[in-house]
Image (cartoon, rainbow, N blue to C red; front, side, top):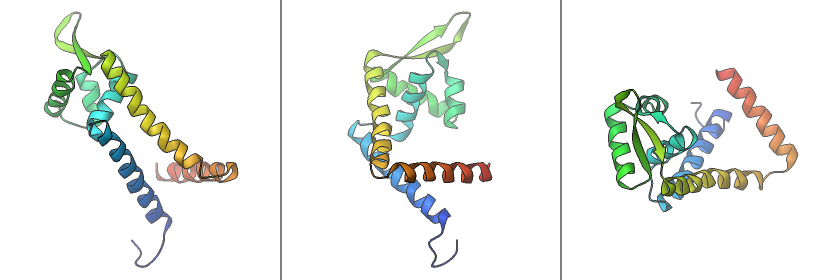
Length: 140
């Protein structure tokens, strides 16, 4: 980091922190932490997926995922069903309560998007998107 400067990378980092703070504050209102929300969103968008897929997506160990799933199952947000032909493997599905909660989680992200978009004019939005895509492509 360059001392005493206002670099683009510092601004990107600050936006990331502010975005995460906003999201965590909203998730707390739903009585969820980030990993629970990401888990529910993954199962919602990938019904029938298995624990190994979820662990890979979240970058967590199977034991950690097992505990997360147990809690979400106890809260009646998800259900695990034995995979036909493999009794050791369970597919993950949302319950009706889980689907309602997943809709609220997605609304958190949509609301954040709207807060940002409503603060910018069309040309600023397009410039920002183009600039961020360019930075993203450079860093890949």
